[in-house]
Length: 184
Image 1 (tube, rainbow, N blue to C red):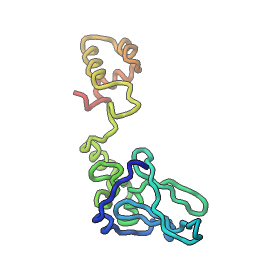
Image 2 (image 1 turned 90 degrees about the horizontal axis):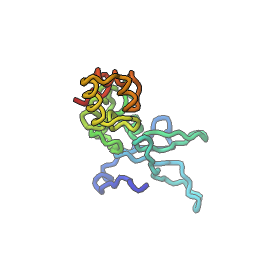
Image 3 (image 1 turned 180 degrees about the vertical axis):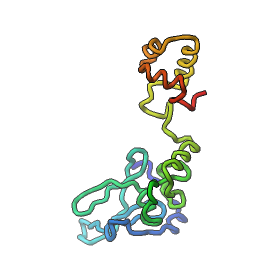
Image 4 (image 1 turned 90 degrees about the vertical axis):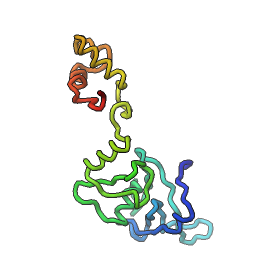
C-alpha cells in the first residue's frame, strides 16, 4: 500500500506487542497500530516465522484480515489496539480517534467513547459527514441558501422541489432547519 505509515526508529523502539483477543497465538497487535501474524510459514525454508500484515483501507479506516479455523474476518486496526491494550468497550461505546485522523492507530490516540462523544469529536475535528461532506448529498451549501431565500420570497415547495431535484418534504425539512442545520 503506498500510504503506509512511516514509523520513526524511536516509535519502533517504544513499540509494545500484545496478543489479539480471540486470536491468541495467531496474531499480535502493537501499541503503534501494526499487526503481525505468528503462524506464517516461510515457504522457502518451511519454518515458522513472524510477518507484519499489510493493512488496507476500509471505509477510511486501516484494517486487516485475520484468519482462524479457515475463516477470514476483516478487523479495524484501531479496534484491535484498544481490545488488546485497554480491554473490551464499555456498554454503548465505540473506538474514537483523539485527533480525528482515521489511520492514526497509536494507542495514545485511541479511546473508548460513547456514540455522542465520538460525534462531538467529529464535529470538533471537522470530519463529520454532514452537508457537502456527505457523498450522497444532492445539494451544496449555496443551493440551500438559495432555496431558503426563494421560499422566503414566496416560491412554493412544489416549484422548489422540481427546481432542485428533491422532494417537497425535503424542501420543508431544509426550510424548517431540520436538515442542513449547520447552514445559516
